[in-house]
Amino acid sequence: MLFLKRIVTVLALIYLLLALLILFFPFVRTSTVGIFSAYSLPMEVNMLLGFSWASVAVIGLLLLIENLDSGLLRRRVGKQEQKINELKAQLFDAQKPLAAPGAYPPPPAPMRPPGVSYPTADQERRAGPPPFPTPPPTTY
Image (tube, rainbow, N blue to C red; front, top):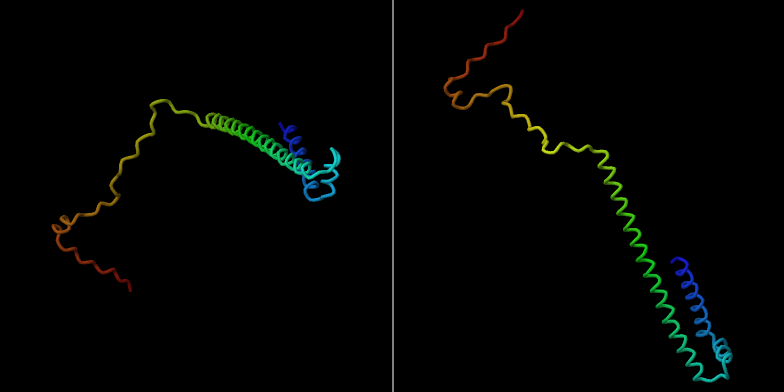
């Protein structure tokens, strides 16, 4: 496919060079028409129409080959990405051992009350006023 693509591209470039020479240089146009027969205006018009149809054919062929090549490349890249994903899955499966069916993680530990229990408002009311603090001992 690459060989066909290169051939069509080279043919398109050669055709483009020849068409530009004929369109922009009148002496090349007259000499090209003169190769086939005596110069005449209808012959020149027919030659330019022929170049127009040839350009349509060459550009169409070039577009067809480019689209075919890009489609094949997209398909090839898709297959390679799929293969990469399969290899990644195999690597992941090999690294992570599977748990036995039905095995669940252990339940979380139950919440324990705090180490110091604080009295409720009702317990504080029943206890009465707090005792007076004792002054710290003094040393002289």
